[in-house]
Image (cartoon, rainbow, N blue to C red; front, side, top):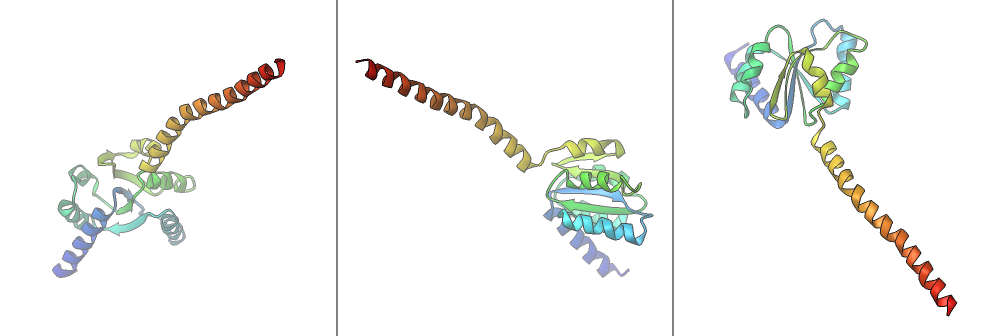
Length: 172
């Protein structure tokens, strides 16, 4: 590969890493064509960008990217593919789902919510991370619950008060 081509690839990778909030580093070596195609299709359906990269080019791209990716450098060995997305737990769920039938992709590391997760044992923790939208929905649900209780109490009291007033007016 020519030096100019490498520079273009590094610039493109840097742009892609800066564009997405979350990045997973995995190993998909050993998947046959059908499984690789199925993984790519599943990534496309869940808005995850899957890119097979050379470790040295990815390292240079991460050095130029916004953010601190230095903790990911030790895992850049062997075959490497990156999964880029805007939802922090989507790639973790995809990896777990896909590995129910295969032993690949292997999870190496992730950069999620500006934190670095390294090692296979971090996959379950990443699955349980809630996205920003899920957290907002949980907060709204918690805030609505007390308000709904007050409103329903006032509405049920309204019927009681109307009944008392009606009964009193009928007695006279």
